[in-house]
Length: 69
Picture 1 (tube, rainbow, N blue to C red):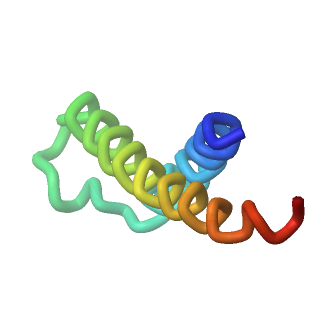
Picture 2: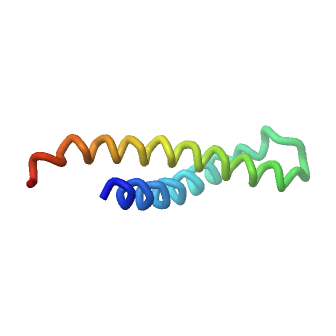
Picture 3: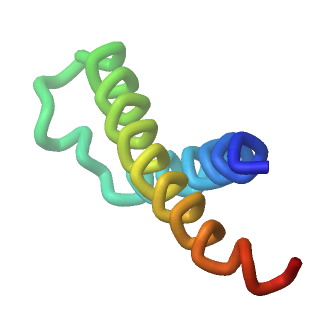
């Protein structure tokens, strides 16, 4: 059950973080025409944030694991 919660949370939070990072326009901090580096940075930062948020969801779900059984 923990793996399902982690993987689903990871996918959902990755998509949300990618959209948020795209809306923040961090490409101004990079050199012009470095599109590959910008996309790689968006991907890695979004994946790291999604991992942290998915771990929080797993820990949060284990708090209530014994209450509903």
